[in-house]
Image 1 (cartoon, rainbow, N blue to C red):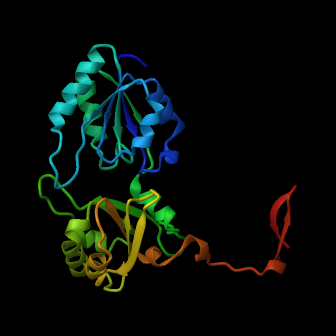
Image 2: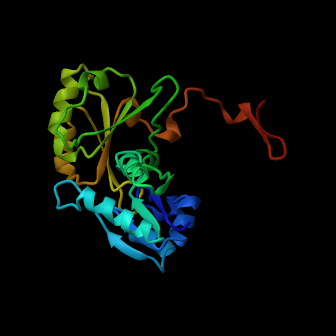
Length: 261
């Protein structure tokens, strides 16, 4: 793994959600460039590596992207095994695609390692099924924060019929509500706001589109948090089946598996 950069997803926060491939890359790393939201417990897998914080967080002073590029290139050209460790998944709002392209253009071998993104982990921890037969046939992931200030196609999002997962939206709840309402989304559409997804101190606030800003304020919702907007946000994976069966209707043979009587 020498003279190479690994762009590794550290997952949403819970260190037990790391992939085996991510653990292997960390164990063999000489240098780890670590994002701001990565759990420190993850670094137990790379005790001998040099750790360089290169954090980025909205509203705070961030490490310039050009500087991160140069650091990765310098260490890789010196024959070091470099891990660029990112929260969540490197290719979901993590600039992994940009970094991979830049490194390859400069002659550096790159390998991407997936991580579990916060939108999926947070919903699962709250027993929210992002897709559900007869209710939600798809999922749309978007970020409310754009570097160039461009706007999303809110009407398409409001009328898309999929579960909407919004990252970095805590500071823009008013805009999100108004844009989705203007786009035709129902005022009583269920909303789940999930703070610190997958961590021991994860919190969730259930609301609806009209009331979500007021409820978030009362709840004192803080970043990092995700929004899950859609009919599934009113449901729990434990109680969402469309089919029902009494205990007498089911028979289980531990040798043969599950079958209906």
